[in-house]
Image 1 (cartoon, rainbow, N blue to C red):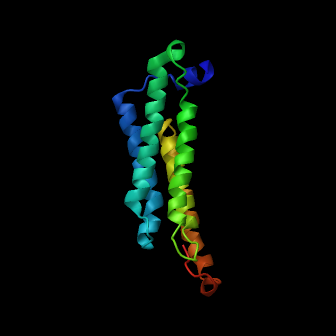
Image 2: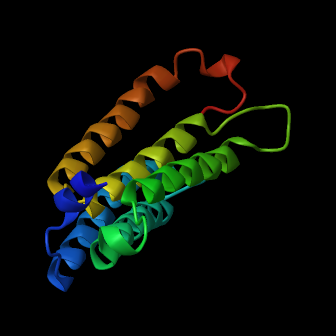
Length: 159
């Protein structure tokens, strides 16, 4: 626990929070832009919100850990991160379930999960890393357009 606390005790200021939140918004926006352009059910606003929310939870966990110290309460930010990952999986499941015989939304679910990871990375101060990962993920989604047409007639609801 002390190792985690010491690694995260970086003395964040409000300017640091703002930069991390902006990186989260940018990263989520990059990833969501592809989905918006392709007119998918979940668009850029949702991706930005997922990324921003993940960054908020991450920053809050770090700040709680810093303010409580190790003596008062076991404020372990990794527990918040674990909960965040589980919650993102639940959100993704909602994107997959459609209520009919067809299963679709897998790419949406996976990219929402990635949007959460982008926010988490931004929240811990890896903003440039998050933006690079967003560009890579958006590139993957864009490249999948070429594969989407192959066998598209066999799939009832391509995502």
